[in-house]
Image (tube, rainbow, N blue to C red):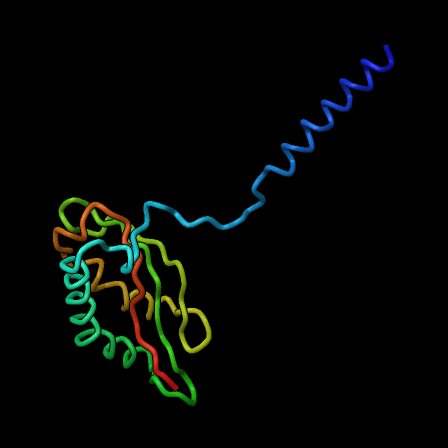
Length: 145
C-alpha cells in the first residue's frame, strides 16, 4: 500500500513539475500576423511603401521636427523614429495602430510629436498591395555619426 501511494505521489509530482517548467513566463513572442517591410513578398509592395514613406519624409517629417523644436545633429539628437503596427483594412484605411518602439533623442516621444508623425499615415489611403494586413513600419530618420 505504501509503495502504491508513494508511486502515485511521485507520478503526481512529476506531472505538476512538468507543467510548471512548460509554462511561458512572459517571454515576448513576435506576432506571426504582423508583416514588416522585409517580409513584403513583392518588389511592387516595397516600392509602394517607399513612395508613401518618401512623401511623408519629404513633406511632413521636417515640419514635425520644427513644430516640436527638434534638430537632428550628431552632438545632441542623432535619431528620431517611431516603430508602429498599422492595421490596414481592405479599402486601404488604417483602422488601428500600436506603437511598438519610439526613440526621440534618447527618450520617449511627446504626444504632440507622436501625433504629428502619425497624422499622415492615419489619413493616407494605402495601395492594394499593402491592404488587409498589420504592417509594422519604422518612420523617422537618423544620422550616421
